[in-house]
Length: 363
Image 1 (cartoon, rainbow, N blue to C red):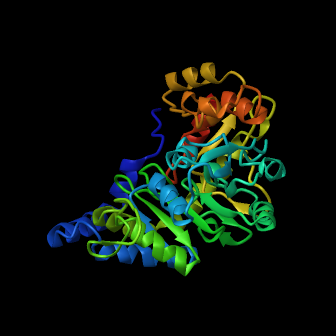
Image 2: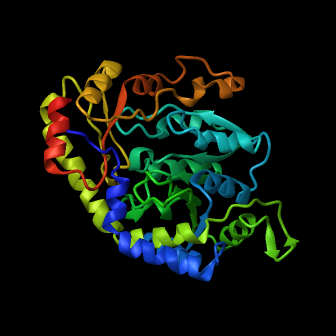
């Protein structure tokens, strides 16, 4: 059996008629930048998340940049975040010449451990940036309480978690600003790059809208130093179609994750299965297990037609590009251990029961 990790082509064929029609409507109008479909998507995202404002942008990475620019993050400001995430989280902080300050992760959820945040706060700290890793929000009650106590902003990196909830609220409707990504392999993906920024602040929303078009408040009049950060009309049209079916896809993801966990329940001595915290729902961007002999397991699964992935093999504090921060091996032991053991199994809404059984038997 040959397993498709994400089944992107399968999903396209499922919604092909509507997606093709939506794309052709854009092509027929040739309004490729800031066309009507952009505003339509933003309205639909607002309705889905219940956030007051949804502003589309060119990628999940640019969404983080726009969030920090809107909050006027300056060189030498410090932002507390996790070392166990995709590089964009900390890369964007460094890009603005601010300083990423890492905090170790919770051993169960792999999200930032709130109990370790306060000890890292200094006079230079301006924000906390939790990541909703693998599709599950961090402990936002604890994080928000710390932020409120120290007058800090909260920026949520929700690149993997669009549609997840924390105590009944979408994670796009938490913190001062939340972001997401529509990269093709994300739970809600476009056919290129795209992202969105969410906020309940009228002031921040207005600023973000200007920042994504080079800081313009009207054509050729620039209030801020901004960027070319728009999501193009074609991609918005595609996500508009897929968003119509997203709740159904999320329900299917839950079913796939549950079936994985049921099939693997007796393997707890060899595997650490994913954990979803009380009060949270995950969108299961990944279904990630921990194994001690990962390389060997991955090689043998590949021989059986089962692709796997590692999210992420090296924590950020050990990356060469962050050597200037001065972190050493051993400073974040949980992140380091998890990075050596984590392995993602094929995950998408369309995995068949027989595929799940096959994967689990071979694993």
